Length: 179
Image (cartoon, rainbow, N blue to C red):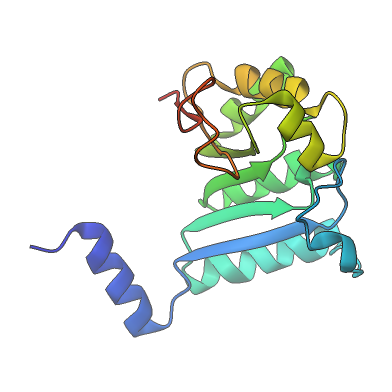
């Protein structure tokens, strides 16, 4: 027996409906990760109006799931307005972030907006390794502070280390499900 999700995906493909969409809101970032390809890309950001128009088109086309990513999405001053707009269009919203800018107040606002999941970039259970990868001293501590702020009920936080074998000391697979 096929699941409802499988039937939805099959129907979506058959009708040419974009079920899930990933939108990079910015190429700017507050880390300088050794593996990142964003540093070689140079393209302008869409304006807030352009993003809202794109979201309207995607909603009209039938898309259900929306992921905002980047660079670091929280470097955009209008990101909360864009999330609110996406929710008004009835998207199921997921975010990708390094969590360096996540505070208790911001995490509460994301909960209030109805964000379903936040994926956090955690590159190692070792602060030295993580900071070496991001090339930002102290980024591991700040990232984990952001994860803790996101963790209270109603947000699902997912962080997966770059090296899956480097998870013994902290969080096993870095999954925190706060539903």
